[in-house]
Amino acid sequence: MKAIKFLSIIALTGLVLTSCSDDDDAPEIINEEELITTMTVTLTPSTGGTAITLVTRDLDGDGPDAPFIDVSGNLTSGATYNGSIVLLNETESPAENITEEVEEESDEHQFFFTPGGGLDVTTTYSNFDTAGNNLGTEFSLVAGAVSSGTLSFTLRHEPTKPNNDLSDAGGETDIEATFDIEIQ
Image (tube, rainbow, N blue to C red):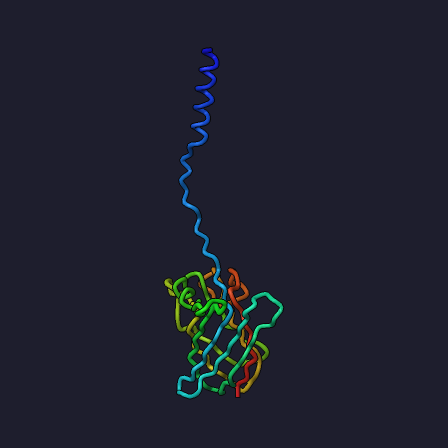
């Protein structure tokens, strides 16, 4: 009888000790990437005139439909443009402005501007993260000599900063779009 009582107490003590744990770790908060369906780049001539918009819209994401891409006009040789980028999630109604989140989390994001195919443009960052590193939702663009080519805009999440080169930026691409551009 003493042995049964003794074994019962040991079993009960073991059960209590294994069920109690001081593992009070809070669950890890996962910051999921936002869905970006639409990017609009607005290039406004610094001397006045008509703004040019570059738009890419892909409402089905990785689905079968190709993204809609539109360029509203041509750049003028020698002109300086003030650029701004707006990112939206248009799968929600009303559309969610993702630009605000990118700017709030500026230390975790950076836009990269990549001309290609002989396009003569120079870009300069106009806004920065909390540490003074490039962000790029605002920028200036100078259109050089008459030329044509492509201009790519790439938003990286958690890139290596400071950095001006997409090829070694690291991080993950949140959105990337390439536009056919002409300078006249």
